[in-house]
View (cartoon, helix red, strand yellow):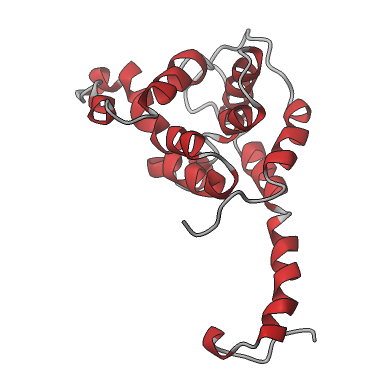
Length: 185
């Protein structure tokens, strides 16, 4: 069978879906390489910062690793801004959506909200409420997101920081994306 016979999913058979499953899994196994491509697309354009978004991502992950964060959190630190390439205005939601099946609820929540929490450091310069993050003050992952931004994200624009190369993080990304922890929740 090279293709399924159905043209509507409701008409598919168990055999056809059994045929499709390994093809789906092969496609899922390409996700790390697609993410490395998104990171690579952030090279060179500094957007006015002292480092480009690629270096910012590597610095954020390097800081998390050096602070003793677990592997999944380090991977989230590396990939937290990959949504910038596709959707700059809601990059946090895009990155969080990609990560969701593979990471804990805590890490998903941190990546999803890091853009708003990062605003603490600059919103007041743009006439916005720097404390907008406080609407989530009672959320169990509030402190984790504050810490993510304070210790890793907001400080990772330093051209002199000893940043680890992507090759250091590639095996971690592949391990985290090896098998989804949850689907369709």
